[in-house]
Structure formats: C-alpha cells, structure tokens
Length: 95
Image (tube, rainbow, N blue to C red; front, top):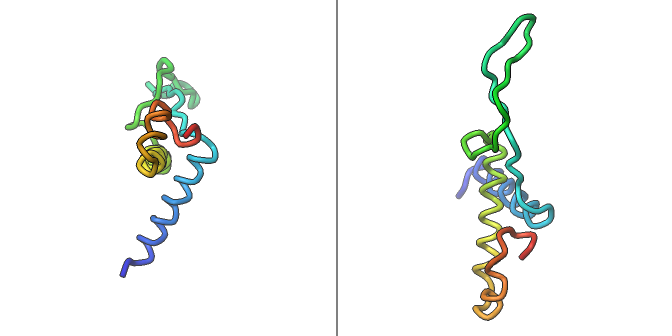
C-alpha cells in the first residue's frame, strides 16, 4: 500500500498533467543571473538568457515533466492512422 506522501505526489502529478492539456505547455521564459550585490542592496544582473531545465524550481520541473508525460499519454493511446496525422504536434493542448 502506498503511503500518504506518494498518494499526494501522484495526485499533484495528475493535476499537472490536466493543467498541461488545458493550459498548454510550460513556458521556460528567460533568466537574469545575479552577478553581485552593489551599494545599498542594489543587484548587478547579468544579461538576459533563455532559461534551461537546471534553472527551474522543483515545482516548475514537475510542471515541465508533466507536459512531456501528458503528450506521451495522449500519443500512445491513438490508433496508428490518427497518430500519423498529428505526430508533429509538440504539446498536449494541440493534440
């Protein structure tokens, strides 16, 4: 029997998968790294760059992974003739 923590994690993953289908894929966005702290607490930021997986918070990583799972679940359940028509879509909402 699964413990309560595992049950909660599975439920949250299910919610993330449904959100991926309803809202579309997680958007990585951009990131500015803090280079140093200046006078009076002012931050010196680096150039803006696209975020990568390692920049994401644990919650964002869960959402990103749920997007991939949602797409895979939907594609695996399709007959071959339909799959061949939509296999170029990259996110669950489009499928």
